[in-house]
Structures are given as C-alpha cells and as structure tokens.
Image (cartoon, rainbow, N blue to C red):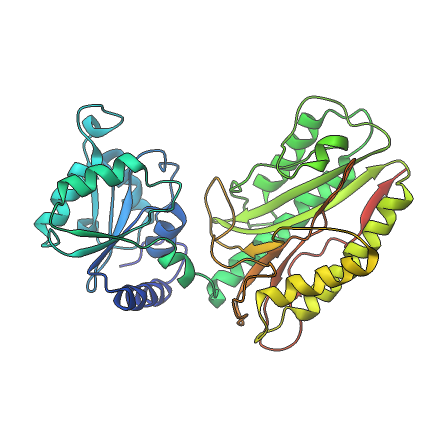
Length: 394
C-alpha cells in the first residue's frame, strides 16, 4: 500500500529498498537497524518531530521494512509511512527517558522474536541519533548477535537522486530563491537581526505558490562583521550596521528536501580586498562548475576552485561542499562524499551537491555558494537563480 499523503510512489520506495538490500548483502548483513531520521524517511516516508526519542527502521532481506518507535509516534507512522500498519510498531511510554528500562530492550525482544538473536545486524554507529547507551543496551540484550557498524550504508544509496526527488529539490530551490531575495531586500542599517530572520523564516515557510515551505534542517545563519569570520553563527538582536558584510546561509525546504544557497550583502562600500576576494571566488566557482561533470571526481571540483585562489594569492583550507537532499536537523548534508582535494568520489548524473567555497578572512566573511546538479552531459547545473555576486547596498 501507499497512503495518499506519502511523498513518493510505491515504485520509488521499492527502488530505494532494493538498493539498500543490495548494499546489505554486500556487507554480509542479515538485518539493518536504521536510526538516522533522514534514512528512515527515505525508506518509509516517516515524517515527524520525534527523533528526540529512540526510533528506527528494521530492514530485512525480504518483505516490507518495519518502522519502530514510541507508541504515540507509531500513530504518526500510520499517517506517513507507506507500509501496512502491521509493520509500524510502538513501545510503551514507560520506556521513555527512564533510568530503569530502555527502549532498546523492546527492540531486542522484537528482533529475537523474528529470529535475529544470533545474526549479523547492522547499526549506524556514527549517527547523531544512536547513543552509546542504546548500543550498550542492545548489545547486552542480544549477546549472541553480531552488531556490525553500518554507518552511512543507506546514506550512500541516496547519493544519486531519482527524477521524483529532483522534482522536490527544484521546488526547494525556488523557495531558496524567495528566502534569499527576502534577506537581501530587507537588509539595511538599523534593522534588528532577529527581525530580519523572522522575515526570512516567514518567507521559507510560506513557500512559493502551491509549494509550501517545510522547516529547514539548519536555522538561518546570518552573522555580520567580525561574527562573519566564523562559519556557523546564527543571529542576535543587534541592529545591522554600515560598513559591515553579512552572509546569509539559508535553504528553502520542500517535504524535507533542501537546496542550500549563500549570498553576502555589504552595507556601504566594500574594501578593495573584499572586491578582489569576490573576483577570485566567482572565478573559482565558475571553474568548479566546469569541473563538476559526470566522470570527473569531487576532488576535481575542489582543485579547480583552489587553483584559481592560488592564482590570486588567497589561502583556504577545508572542504567546500557535500551532497544534499532529504534531511532533518541538525544538518542538511548527507554525510557521504565531500568536495575536497582528497576525496575521489566519481561524479554521476543525478548527484546534487551544495558547492560551498566560502571565504572566512580576518575581519569579514564572504559566502557565495550554489546547489548544483550533475548532468548527463556538460557542466553542473546551478539550481537556484539569485545573481552570483556580492550584493552592495550603499
């Protein structure tokens, strides 16, 4: 079955399940327990703000996957998952944040009842939502099973987007354009940053036309002046000031799919150093887009950008991009490939990246980025439409 409010077709979910099972077989897994909310949603359609308690998806070599979580969230599973209700399970509230019992005890009993007590079970060890205590309890309750680190096994299956997914990302990109346009138009000296962010969030949730906006996996990042020399600061109640740059790292979101976009606004007259950095950054982005072709590698994008920076005498280190798509807080990245010099992931059509070659200097920051799609032929396609430049408001 596929409920009418499931985001995708049954054929799309079958495709995802088939890819995941092939990866499980290659890893020698008899079962997989998935805790990453993005992976849960990708496999089952589950969508709820319940990832603060223990929940997950059980995938086996045959049959429908099983969503397992808190009883009250099981009811949300029935509203959002595509599977039969018999494969949407809930544990009692007495397990929640208890010091006496743990939800993994319930999960272990369900796995034992299905014959997995002495099998190889994959778990996502490096994941925000799978705690050390959860692993310890599950291990103790399944002493004859072998728990295998299956971190990112599902994530890697998500790297190439289907046509259905690309449709959602394009809708997110239109919302990103609206969000960024709002930020750039509203920014002015004296405007309190929290008021600006309120407008940004309103634009994002309003969406575009019939395409309503979802909450993004990362809140608006909007630092100004010296705060913009750091990468991940949010906002405060201080007024915006003349002679300061503010970068906006934002994303529209449509049914959990993202299209991150960054632009920088300067209130006043930017320095010659900033203008030169802008020139280098824009030339570097153009070079990176030309290198972002099917058959090339992620490192080719990074090296093309860094080659331009070197020509301008600008130093930069660290990665400059990552795959994006479906995600939940605290991150809109997929945590697989990276756009950096040491990563040799081969680019394939349907991959979508946030190409993010930001510059954080001693006294200012300059973020200009694009969400890009790797095409069958030619250079990557930027999915957003906002002009690629430093926006100056004198």
